[in-house]
Length: 188
Image (tube, one colour):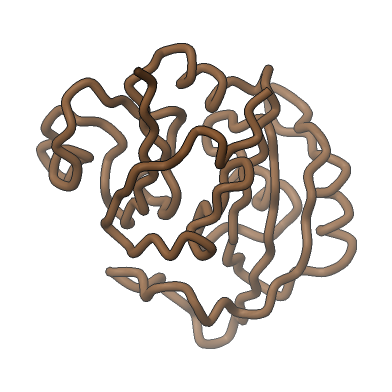
């Protein structure tokens, strides 16, 4: 039987179950045999990660072919402007590909977001700002690379939603996991 779990991944946790010499891994938080991540979330990124025991479901969640939207809250260096948001919305040229259009909006600093440990390094003379960005591709470090391409380097990246499953709607605390009904996603 297909099962799905949601995990709120902390910063500096590697998205693998095998041991890592420097960082904690999923095995430090989840002890369910046969479950594997459905997609990636980099060590320096935080937030929602789905895991499943079903290879076909894993492909539906992680493959860009199925266009399951993934939403990120991104803290960037500098005060992001309308021009940069418009470029992100249209898609940007990265080294080896042009990104698909994204849904992008300015955000007030999130008040319901946990403190990152360790905190990001902020420069006193350079302000930061937040955006929400929703993509369906999920190529390697794509959101970070998109932000850098428009001149606003990413300082913090938190995935808050996959499909219609939202970390905050479901009140999933940092470092915790829970079972998810497969119907909670937009799977086609």
